[in-house]
Amino acid sequence: MFRNRRADIFLPMIATFLLWLKTYTVYRTCFHFKPINLTQEIILFINPIGFLMILFGACLFLKTRKSRSRYILISSFILSIILYANIVFYRFFNDFITIPILFQTNNFRELGDSVYTEIKWWDFIFFLDILVLYYVQKKQFLLSISVNPDNVRHRRLYFLIACIIMMVNLGISEIDRPQLLTRTFDRKLLVKNLGPYSYQLYDIILQSKSSAQKAFADETKLMDTQQYVQANYTPPNKEYYGLAKGRNLILISLESTQNFVINSTLNGKEISPFLNHFLKDSFYFPNIYHQTGQGKTSDAEFIVENSLYPLNRGAVFFTHSGNTYASMAKKLQTAGYYTAAMHANNKSFWNRNIMYKSIGYQKFFSSTSYEITPNNSVGWGLKDIPFFEQSANLIRSLPNPYYVKLITLTNHHPFRLNEEDNLIDEYDSDDPIVNRYFTTVRYEDEALKHFIQKLKEENLYKRSIIVLYGDHHGISENHHAAMSHYLRKEITPYDSFNLHRVPFIIHIPGITDQGKGITFSTVGGQIDIRPTILHLLGIETKEDVQFGHDLLSPSFKQYVIFRDGRFVTDQYLWTANTCYLRESGIAVDVEQCKPYIGKESKIFMYSDKIIYGDLLRFNKER
Ligand code: GP9
Ligand code: MN
Image 1 (cartoon, rainbow, N blue to C red):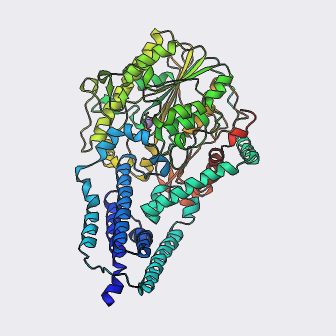
Image 2 (image 1 turned 90 degrees about the vertical axis):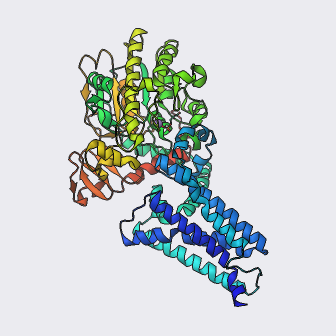
Image 3 (image 1 turned 180 degrees about the vertical axis):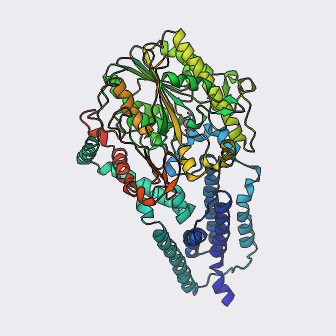
């Protein structure tokens, strides 16, 4: 009798135990979570329990044994899929899935190669617990067949315990990391504190909240932001303003290109010989940090066009492609430019066909505008050399003056090349991703050399301003062992932060060439690219709602912010709760960084409000 009464709560308890065990193992082995104190260790250990007990406990309200078993098996399977999807996603992105990303089914088809390389043959072990669960309920191992009316008491006790565990979890998380849910935008911290399942639920709630925000937004919210932005306006430098006035703008997004490859060698050979030479004839900014989130290339495009911060979750190209934007493209079109984007990938990839309309490109040359064959493709698509070659022909037909944006692709994870395109030997660490990275960067560099040559041949060079930027890092933190091998030093949080620097190069024929280039040590972010370019073209941005500043302005304030609270100024670099001197990497008293800590949230709040509320639709100036 006693066995029967007690037994009804065994099924959800066993299901909870199995999934908890699996989740915790995944934390330590796949996500490499390393708690730095006992509190964090406890949080990590207990965090999946409350949610799982409640979710599985719902079966106790079902009347028959069959329906309870079915409920438990199905929900355990769904949660296992969520966990496994996050494992694969994490291997590639070093990040967790958010709901908006899940809706990007178009992308998943094309993410193929990258995702495929991250799926391992032994991954079936992530589902073995479901077999155990199936066996347990099938054999009625430890379980009862009857539903005892008295079990209401046990059910109450069961939920009481689940709620207590959840409250304790949230309580200590809040003590360890105050304002976790209201202020922290870092997904890793959320998963570490709430567990992957509650995190996913939290993400759904946020998603619905942002839909509501748009519905309730009005003009006054835009005025607030306008005031803030205009109070922080940085006037252009007279010396540089209009330096490239009326010229054609050729903007190039360099896939996964980090700044550390510039002026560096591998086995005595330069990794980017062309760029090394080119930047002597350009304005070159080696201290520009990428500020992209889950939208990666598309986030970089978003920042450069709008000088707004991309979102902390999802790709804004997907989540807010219907918004009104005051993009650089629109601004240039108003100034008489023809605007176009060139990318030899499927037009719907990253929702570009939709988002590009909102950004305002008059023409999008996607895969259908290119001749793509198995011979001229590798990895994600058309190789950079034929891409540039064909693009130059397309550029020739554009009306002057034009703004054209080109997106390279070959230097994309997992960094594959055809044998004949290997211009330097691979690196020889244990990490094939890092080993290949150098070779694809070298290939991209060669492609750029050909492109500039072609522009010269086609007489497209002299009347242009050519701007290059790295879109984001290609080598994530997961590959730091090999990076540390290459750099011959241990990678500290300071180094890791600095590896997020991407090259930013402005080449103005007749002005910066013949050795008249300048290297600016200014510390900035991708957010600053829009105002810098527009001012060089002699286009005012005083009335614009933008969050970046002209890097060439004498009053430019060097302060770059990130979603997880990190920041860098000309003097300091704040990461992993440590204040470093930016140039030397020496850790100093936290007090020195204090004046800046937490200041970023207000800026992100203003920028996010623009996106969530679609506030630029109220802008009469646009
Ligand atoms: C492909 C390009 C690459 O179209 O956007 O995307 P990424 O994975 O770097 O965001
Ligand atoms: Mn990219």
